[in-house]
Length: 291
Image 1 (tube, rainbow, N blue to C red):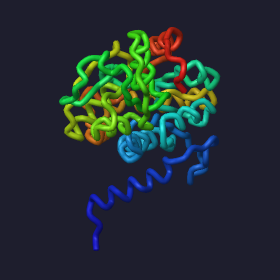
Image 2 (image 1 turned 45 degrees about the vertical axis):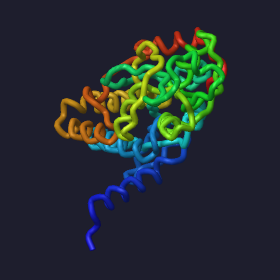
Image 3 (image 1 turned 60 degrees about the horizontal axis):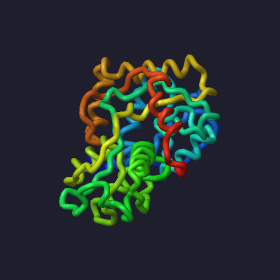
Image 4 (image 1 turned 90 degrees about the horizontal axis):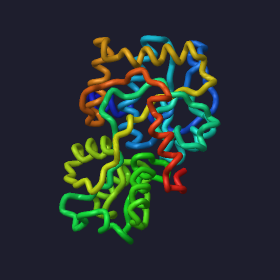
């Protein structure tokens, strides 16, 4: 009997996840004998959604350049950060690389999303009795993890500056704590504005924003210094030019549907200076327990 398209898709996802879950510190050889390079992705969404979004993009890069990038997903954001700190990823999609403790890893920004900037938010469900941040004093407030930038460090800094003490609880990643908010397990949550909007759209969740931070550039793609510069440049050019290539645009449109992403799609060339706001935040924040 022929398999349905849905069954084929699930089989592809299972193969992707088998390769993606888990971390490695060296570059395995491909069937052609050429090295493969690890591409780590910060845990924000489920492993399935992350694989469905990133694997077509990485496959496009291989088709255009011959360079194989292997998706690597940690189970939680803290595990992802531990791998970043050890320099286990060759390429990484994460905004936690700007924490001071990651400086020795030496990751350098090469790309940033063309999409609108992100912000930290503190949100609650639409019918919640919580009306202002002051109403959260002494209450449990959900956060993705200690490692989250706009989901934890930025909103917690705002709460501390306002003199509002809360009891943090953690959901492992962005969508993990959003699910707890939806289920009524927490009264409010610190979130990434874009991830929250997409999650609410998929899950039919109505919510209110109690507080929002200034904008920050969305998560960048960065490269470890051990990766040869000519190779990193090839990867950057391939991803930067996807929206100008009919096949690349098709991939971007298909992957955007997976996570509910709106145009503009794709990535553009970037550099560390574009993310100075992150560095400045970490220099001045009142938060001391991010990891």
